[in-house]
Image (cartoon, rainbow, N blue to C red; front, side, top):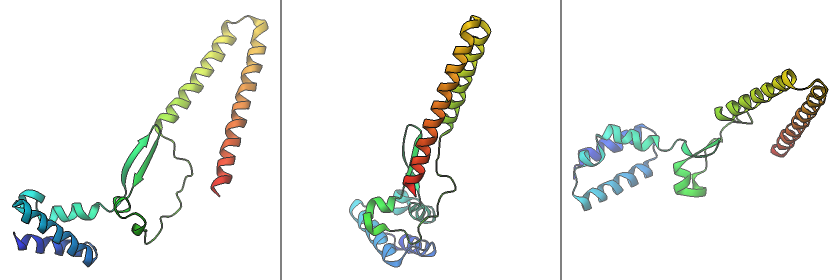
Length: 161
């Protein structure tokens, strides 16, 4: 076992702000692993400066997955420690309340483009007596959809307060 490797790793972890008990526990676990496997630390983990950087950076936020148009993030330490991984300083309030994906904006744009093309086509090629009824029906549907969307967003905003 190379104690110089672990001394350098521990020093780099301390310099990065890792608490002493975590440094000691990490180095002890790694040393025990290498004692069992008989591997060389440079071959197994890479250079100590790069390995320390990887160990320290794992405590930030990382992508946790996505579901259709919604992406979420996780904290690996929270997954491992549960309630004991409380944040020292809670994050600030986001600037936006809704985070829609680019695909949703593309869908909305295409939908309204299609709706406008249908309206223009109907007005241009339909018989004169049906144009007015079609436009009135379309506008009533558009206003109804806008009201439903507005009420839904408003109720969501009231719930989050």
